[in-house]
Length: 315
Image 1 (cartoon, rainbow, N blue to C red):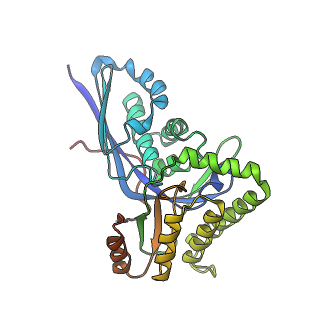
Image 2 (cartoon, one colour):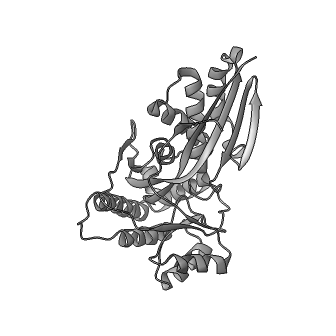
Image 3 (cartoon, rainbow, N blue to C red):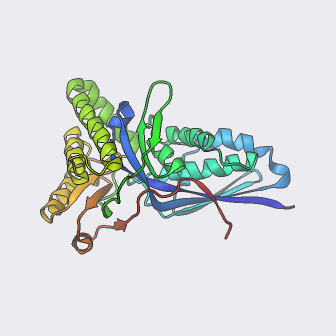
């Protein structure tokens, strides 16, 4: 019996500014990165009847169980395998990358097309299962790629792809330690903090949203009177005030700042252990890599603005 096989991939992402505030309706800026998740999906010719069932059931399947460096599952006559270059649970959108690539493969099997809007809708269902009440920025960035301005609204989110007017500075992603808390738990923590002190948290959210608007202008126009480094620093201080950056990560940030770096935690953060990935800007690569090596911290030299979800040639 002849098998039909498709391979798709989707990038991870880094939030340049707007973590947590974006869940509550404020704008955020995110960029895809050149670390991808690949899905290979196969099914027998007479097994197409299984696909609608698989599509309806898989969003309830715990992504964390199959979002790993290599895993495969078989459901009926459908076989799925995945691999990823993304570190798991560190704020780089590994689950969204998985969801986007899987959604693309499932829908392509049915329609022979990559409809980005449909892919994004299905990927978001996966993300809601994994994270509870995510904003949707992770899956949207993985599906569409590039740099995205995203804002969650009551009826449907609004997002645009930001056209970059000038070359972005070299940046690094530094692992401050895998958080003990999940993104879902950190979102719940912030929600609880907002219920306890609405005025304070809403003030922080409004400031973060303002930074996102300023960053969008800066990325599109060379002459804005501001620097990207300034906006990253402001956003980091607000995240710390929000309470989503733990002591270990704060210590790493301060040490790097003394070395002349600009540092910002990316993603949901973490309090009890590590806080996930930190975005680091420094004009001298060796300074950052030497620090990472001395502290035994993983570091990634990444490119922003990677292509979104795509159908890959079978190897």
